[in-house]
Amino acid sequence: MKHIKFRVSPYPPEIHVCSLDFPILTKLHLDPAHLPVDKSFLADSMPAQSKRGTDVVLIRLPEKYDEETLWHESIHAAAYLLDAVGASFGADSMDTVIYPTEYIVKTIKKRFYGIGKKGG
Ligand SMILES: [Zn+2]
Image (cartoon, rainbow, N blue to C red; front, top):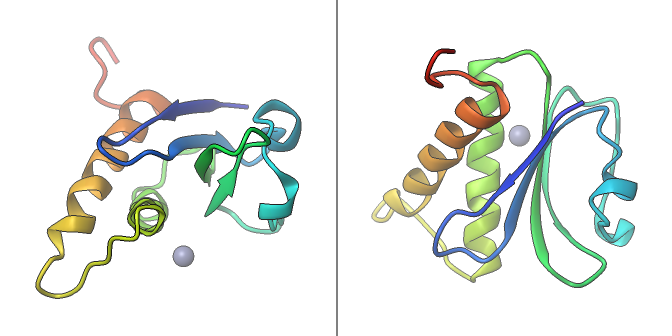
């Protein structure tokens, strides 16, 4: 059962990353109205809101590291960040989504999976 949180500057939403068995409703104080939680998925990501009204992007990942799943959910999460500020991206502005995606992947690899940490 794991959980980390971080932000991707300059985007306001808090990114919460947790394992699928993490009790998000009780521990993260999220508003259930925004959460179509379905345990049948192996991983998912979704925009959510805390009960205090804070914008949150929730990413749920398997405890075991899987490169493709991490990139898949990180791209979703980066798109939700852009959505939250009304930004869009297309073929002429792909870095707008690629930079936050890279930051999300790097942060989750290191802090959630402990990959690339000193001594790890
Ligand atoms: Zn997907």
